[in-house]
Length: 501
Image 1: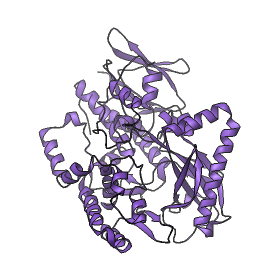
Image 2 (image 1 turned 30 degrees about the horizontal axis):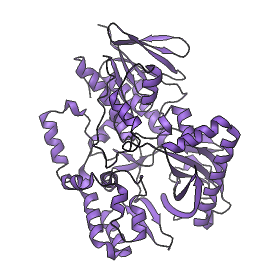
Image 3 (image 1 turned 90 degrees about the vertical axis):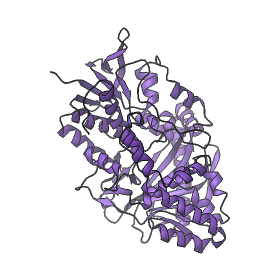
Image 4 (image 1 turned 180 degrees about the vertical axis):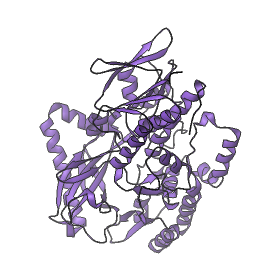
């Protein structure tokens, strides 16, 4: 009996994950990737002698005792041979008065530092630390929720038993709301430094709870190496990766309501028994399916800007001619406001990559600054690019120069040491991966809505499945990983094929 042909469109983390599980489950699997390298936004490249790492700042699922690690290991991203970089602090937040505050991995140490800084906030600090501590044991299950057994629900209840009270209290409170509980200005600034104001507060506790549970380490080699390890595992299992192979269309037989093939941009058609679209969902629905499919889940969310906002970043990379001592891995600070897309940016988040010596020439290092952008900012950059690529470039350089001045002002030892080597706008990410409005994740989960996952299928078509961050808001690498696995699990469940995990 011949194997079923599984075509996966997109070689990002979700596509690679689907590819591995497709091969394990007995499919003849091909990944079609439009670029010359796999990984999607989880990638890296060289500029002016420096390596630009685009994605991983920390990786949820790095704790070998958690379920998610086993999935990362299964797809080849992590495992006994992959060195993990462990930081004592996730980020340091610097105040203008010379004080600073760390998000320590050691929760006791973090609490002591907070109480020393702001004894007037004792009650809310204890509430904050307790909430983070309760999220230590929360983890992702490797099964689509519609396939949960009674035993799975019991396990979920057990894992969530300590967070029920926190979830009930904070699921309808935004990070901005929670920030108002603090009196100390530095702690007010520190609470929301890692995510936008309109995120619901529970997300903050989950993120920090992950880190303090030793589940937020960095795989050696960074983003590109992680994706290439997944590609290697896929191909070792017999899967085929076709790079530089953009897909133009998914061919649908209207009489059977099934996809029969995918059409490449060069006119070639590849027959398929099943298709997993692991592209940006806007590309899948609007281009590959030609707008012929109406998906109420996505239609509602793309229209409702208030309840389902989308975020992005402007990212600037500097080559640094020295390796400054005692500099935290990631630091947030405010100096002079920077005008960006007709509004002011005050907060700068600076990260260095000194833990990766191969990312820079000897004695040097790479530094990255991320500036928060939203959906309207994408429109600014897109219009500027379409009207004048020269002015687009000038504006990028202006912002990068303003950032460089602020970094040197905050760290005087870096004065004259920084060279701009790469500048990315939300429009850069859109051009590169098709990401809707340049988003690096999915819909931001706000206090106004109930978090919901997509069912992972294309309405009205029997054999097309979806994978990627948009299917599992709010996105992130763990959700991309599991969505690829879930897509194969759904195919197997729907069509009575044995799934091999």
